[in-house]
Length: 108
Image 1: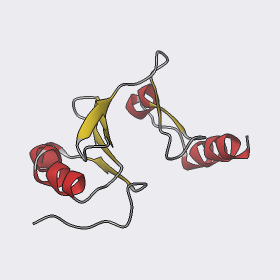
Image 2: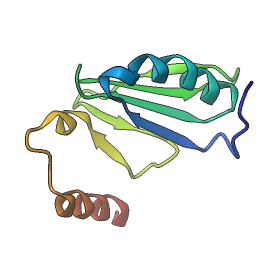
Image 3: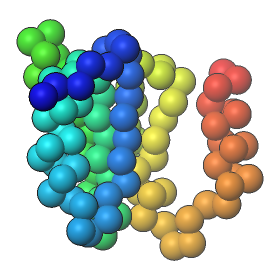
Image 4: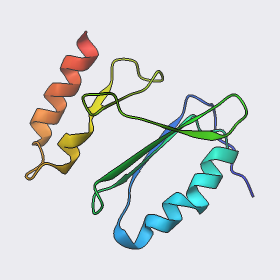
C-alpha cells in the first residue's frame, strides 16, 4: 500500500543502522517513491555509503551523484550543500559548528 505525501518537494533522509539497511533500501524506498516524495537520502555510516535519489517525471527514483568536491546539492533547497566526507569525520563537527555552517549557507 502506497503512502501519500503532501508534495514532490518533500525530502526524507535516513541514517541507517546495520540492522535496518535492507528496510531502508527496500520497503521504505518503495513507499517513498510510490508516495511521490521528491528526494530520498539514505546514509549508511557503517559502510560510509551515501545514496541520494530524486524522483523523475515518471515517478521513479534516479540515483544522484555527488559533485567533484564530494558535495550533495539539491534543487529543492538550493542554498544547502552537504559535504559528504564530513559525515565520516571523527569526531563529527559540533552542533555549534553545524548550526553556524547552516546559517552561513542560508544567509547567502
